[in-house]
Image (cartoon, rainbow, N blue to C red):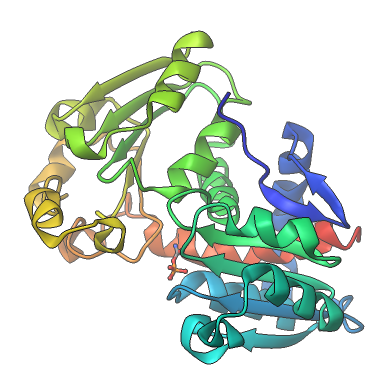
Length: 312
Ligand code: CP
């Protein structure tokens, strides 16, 4: 069964998000986006401390979580490059790190290079744990901002054709997005990847068991005219055991200017970012390029998420 604890622990309870939880966060984010634009955000987290500890590099996730906390009035304690600059460098375990941060902070946002680390942290933490990406496993807040971006444009999350392109084996956004999409009926999925980076057998099996329409292919051009959402991903060099294997597949699927002619006029190009070269910058000014707006939406969604975990 391909299921996920989206946020490993919320208010000291292990939490698997329901469809209602997700819709509640998305609709809260709509209000927050308006409040930010109107300058009417209230500092309701003024009595809270949020810890952000990142064992892997990040631009968007860490800084948008921190901005979200600041916008809501919370105080931040932050460790970037935690492998080198926290006591992890001296051999402290993730469990002890989580225990210690629970002594100081009301919520802990954690990114780690090992799959399952947020879950381990939550097994001992007494504060809420938000998984900000654990290895190739999950990236739940990314998935929430992705569906927020799609819903903002289409108004719904069902009856869509969605293509995921690139490194689908290691894509933690994909792993967190699919359980959300499975709440919504009549979507068709296209998985475009080199064979080495295909979706997991576990996901394939679950989609078959649930009679979900999906097509696996290596022909991106054939898929482009069919989709409402084109979700590009980076081939993740850091997940490969050797550089030769990476070199073989790294440029498998590159979206170029000429591909725009194949896409529907009303479609969305998404990417969790960072991109390397899988989306040519000539595409950035096309109205179907949503990836920077998508990253901005992360702020509203992460603010909504903080309010959700504190029960506000
Ligand atoms: N999308 C995403 O997780 O980006 P960062 O690695 O910059 O946080």
